[in-house]
Length: 208
Image (cartoon, rainbow, N blue to C red; front, side):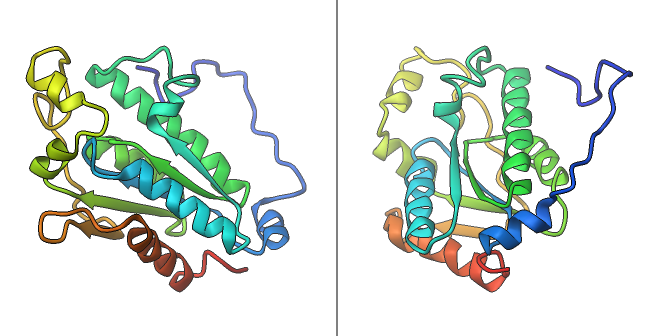
């Protein structure tokens, strides 16, 4: 796992005259990171894309960082061992920070099972611009949904270290938004996205 301390000592931060505040004024919104976490099959990607579409219809600029998609490029060299998972989250956290600094609503959708790694990403941002959204869906519901067939493979022993089966998921302790199943069913995507949009509006992220 890469260290958070630069390996080179002869590097210097270069400030540019156009800053985050300038970009936010241009976009008429405030940059932030909406970090969606939960078990596989809990609806993270669906919520992320629905939220992104809703913000787009409102004229707000957002970008989705999907965990699986990122493993096709940025994180394609990483596996699913604990240290690789930590590095995966570290990289996404740094990229999400850049999007937020650019003034965008960055929607990160990852299982991100370890509490410490999520808190490290939170620490990268200031002024409450890290919004953790916990899709609190039971293992039973997620396994019944199993949209990618991964739980079936994990139960058969064909996937090792699968979150919720033979690797732990550490639920958030102080998330900004918690979305729970209702009567054993995941809420409709539009309803979940609406809950997040309402939070963003109330906290002032969707206007200057």
